[in-house]
Image 1: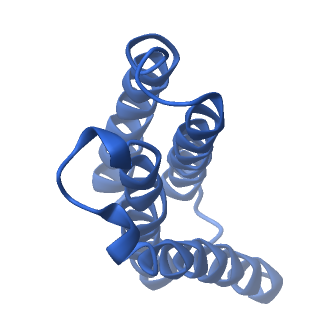
Image 2: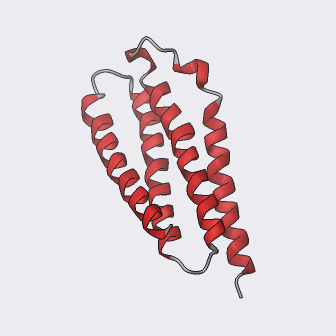
Length: 127
């Protein structure tokens, strides 16, 4: 599981950098400064959680069960939170109205919060 977590973390990190550059350069002329900032929020949270997974994948302090749950919650969080933010920030560039799925953004945030909570509980339980 650790290798899977670390590979996923590196992929999320790579995608964060690519999307950050894309947002800063390619989208600059296409979306408003407010939407650029929104897009950047999605990139930041994706990178934070790539780094979070790097920690989870390299620590032996937390249980394998907790690692697995954290892993899946972070993936859901990135897809729901960051993914929906990317869509909302670039909404005017597509025919699909991402505002119709905007309600998944808080669900992604909740996945992030719960994953950190699981880490916290596991650290508290460690002797």
